[in-house]
Length: 114
Image 1 (tube, rainbow, N blue to C red):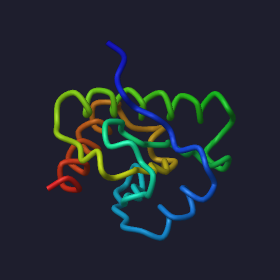
Image 2 (cartoon, one colour; image 1 turned 30 degrees about the vertical axis):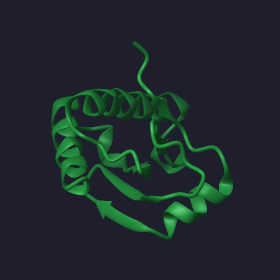
Image 3 (cartoon, rainbow, N blue to C red; image 1 turned 90 degrees about the horizontal axis):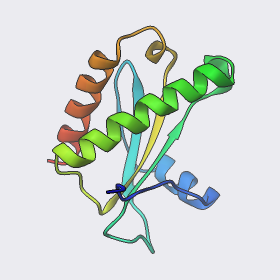
């Protein structure tokens, strides 16, 4: 079954999320908050990697990792679907193991959704 994860699409959505709550760790910065006109059955989440991190191959690798982590987290922990999320990757994601990144991000999303 395909998971119900949808990316943010409008510039206004990104700007509004950047002004709301934020959680940061050594791998990512997560902005989250409620958006108007949001479908409550779908997880709204976008992944951003800056060009400073590396070439397109490295940036896409980071986004694939994040997408995979979120698919697992969506199935295993209760994520608040009322919120929309913006995950901005940091350069430290390239040099660390997938297992460590997954552990840290899962803890952050549990903390956010309490």
